[in-house]
Length: 153
Picture 1 (cartoon, rainbow, N blue to C red):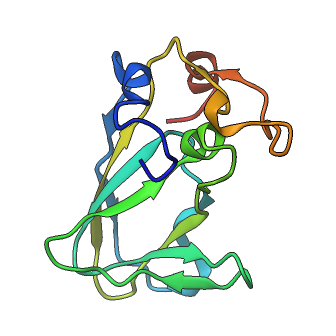
Picture 2: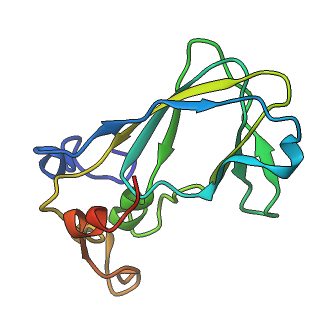
Picture 3: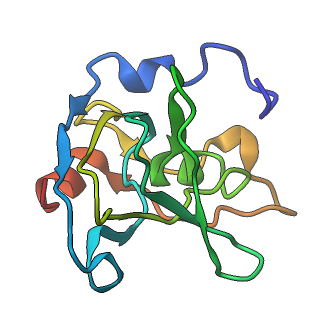
């Protein structure tokens, strides 16, 4: 709705969605400054809902200066990441955020990300309502299922 689209505009893309969940365990690491639990990346899908424990370790890259910012865990809450699919659909109005996970020297960490993705047959491209002569499409369309098949899970 913040894109001035109808509330159900994206619904058809998720009719046969390709969601999955991952269970992450990050053991303690005696030299956390020499290792990452998960290297820097952006989520390729549409939306990620992350449940994490109180240890924390998630960091996001600040766009203005490239500094990595620790995301403090908040009890009984979820972190929501918009992925590359939303960035393409919105024609860069929304951006996928680069993030990574740091390990801890004294405590193990657990997190549970839920990845919400479009149906395998969907072509991901900027929504026609968000492109114009003044704001041309910034991305070429790509087939989500073919793209997903090339990715490591």
